[in-house]
Image (cartoon, rainbow, N blue to C red):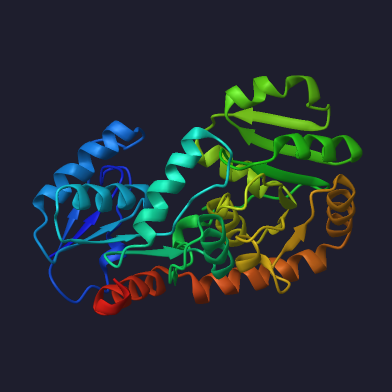
Length: 326
């Protein structure tokens, strides 16, 4: 039996596309609540492992829940297999991160655990920081068809957008904004982060916090470019990139092992960590709209061809159908 374990109730997000290519019996498990704490994850993972029998496979939408399922299976001597979808692990010098690395490392060295990564470069990065030799399967994050805003919004001249929660380098963004006083920076961030940066937010930065998705998308579409400095090599901001592409917006972001897999080869622009690099590239693409449009079109075609729901489901079934990979 194949069990597909999610991290939130079905009413919050229907993930049925994930199993659309499955060719044998499976069961989807949606928890009653959104799993936001270790305690909640352990509860759901424990009940799933208890249901599984020897030879069964548990596919986990949230990668850390996959790691937990593997450990629970190992500790209870359950001979099950686990697939963790798209590893998301940062490299930090904290006790919490060191513990996470230990848990991931042991799982990745097991023949009963398999994982996917969103880019090949990020897979090599994970093997390097964990000193592992895992054979990751490439599975780009999925590009949904409903990312396009359902109404027409005119972009305002000399405007850029940055929004989201995890992995954004807001300090660098606000430094860049001060160097570009004639450019309007539309930002959406958690209120706690806004409070943290109140002293450095300039007059040309329009900041909103904790707004509905519809307002988030309108602000994105009102901006000429998407500008997103990142503070991590791990996947971050991919959903916003996909929303931008669906609405024909060009992306300028940090050069990381993750973003290389999506935005290289003229599909976007990757920046170093220097303020000057960001300033130069933002100025250029605000002034050269045709060049920005070419980048946006290339990225959108890449996502439609390589990151569709259909490709996603087929890749996952390919892993399940090949016992040597799991």
